[in-house]
Image 1 (cartoon, helix red, strand yellow):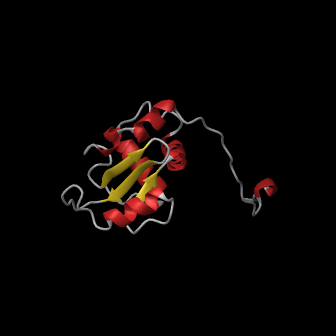
Image 2: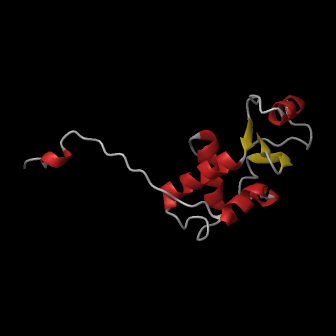
Length: 135
């Protein structure tokens, strides 16, 4: 069998365009994202701002509210757009867009409207960590 010369030792880059659903952006602004059936079993939305989005603490082992490790340092860093301490993340518009793209790559454009909290969870983990760590 001979190889097709058209594909001989070539790589292919695929670029696609997608429109982020407004409902997804609303979900990323909502405390519903931190329901136990979504991201709430591993993430806590610590602080929210309309312009900055969520400050998230990766918290598979829960502690009492407002007692998160490095909370004060994380809040100051988040508000000043400085690097966050370990286990702290931003879920802003850019990260919401990255999560949307992760969902489209995995399940296609209708992933959110035809999906469930489990898919939201996976998309957010892939955007924040580059992998699925929980679930």
